[in-house]
Length: 281
Image (cartoon, rainbow, N blue to C red; front, side, top):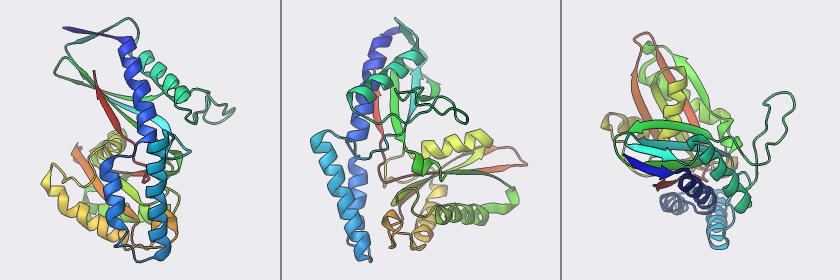
């Protein structure tokens, strides 16, 4: 049994909050650069170049790449041979978010009550925490700040098994079409298939964590990802919704078994500011 002090969890989350908002992942930068010469719209090319300039300046100046620094979504792989001492694990994560959003001068976007008062919590907590118990003596923490514009364009649909691949494809493409420029394209499209109502949504969000440009670990889904990306980029929405071919940089699918009577499908859109950082303690 390995002991980890809660203060170490807080320190790791604090650092992740700052780094995730300031440093765009290299694979995202590469995809944006790759899209510029292929973009037929002059306005679209200019927008892509401006996005890259903005992101490089954010990294150089240590400033957020987007004013919407999002909800702190935390994925935890908790080793079963770890014992956290010196405090509550959940509170340690939330304290790390408080410190990170304060010290990184990141916008606090959470409200206490979702409907009536909607007063700002002033520290961007509570974080959204997804826990998974795994073998081992370490804790892996992945932070994925999620902005409101792309999150608002997400959807779960309880489809029928008879809808098949064609139904899934039509739903995903239509969800992106209806979203237009709201999620700040170019986007990354996370698709969750299977599980149940809530699990499909989580699958879609976890799919966004996959390295951009990587092949799906389940090769059965590779052809569908390619087809979806092609159809989405033929919609003409383009960068920031102002027209062009570059509406999406990638489509990532994550699937798992489901009930014989069901076929849950979820779409979770991620704007080009795909902010994911991981720490292992």
